[in-house]
Length: 291
Image (spheres, rainbow, N blue to C red):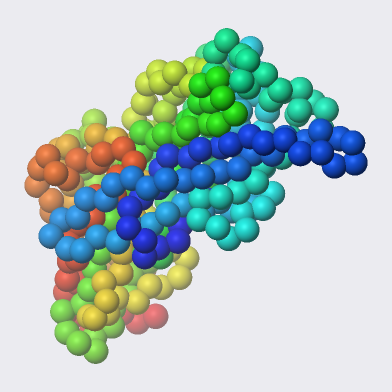
């Protein structure tokens, strides 16, 4: 799943609507994805959000009442914000989704990369190493969500993760610096930024198992930092993170260019389905690193 920017709001709730069509006398069930907007908090600067766009081959995991799982893959996103097509085409797939409206309990669906652990629970991971995507984007297959159909042919998704956006600019017009890594670290070891969400197969939330109080956001390319336009770096973090305050280190080829400190403040705590956007910070006036 990728992000398309310059639209207000973050989209984090996903509806999967089921419709039926016939082709060559074979009953097929198609899923369409619709993504509404949520909120975006800014820290003294204008905030531009984004909307989610499904990628072809994005995969969701659907669990029925018996705890049986089946994967469905996006076949056509058509470039439309929040829309994609999933199709149940085989007899096995059609049998799996046929009772969506009549089941005693809702089906549950997970995105992305859901795995079943040894305790027969479903896990969704927020990793400690994330990949840079421009502006307020984040990597495909990163944002964890769970959804329910509630006796209808539509799944409504929600997430317990939010986003932190930090941005940087140079101090002098015409000056160019380069960055390839940004690291966020909380002030308390148990203020977790990465870990694993655990759910029952019916989508009931069980626990968040924290694994790291540090997240590294890396780029495979050297990223220009200039005076006239701040460059944004977006982290996907668990709800409630940053309560203890945090530091931000900006690096290039392993060298620390600058370290910033954010004191514990209620408005900095990560909220689910929400961007927390920090004011752009200046990088020091140093010579351009040798590339």
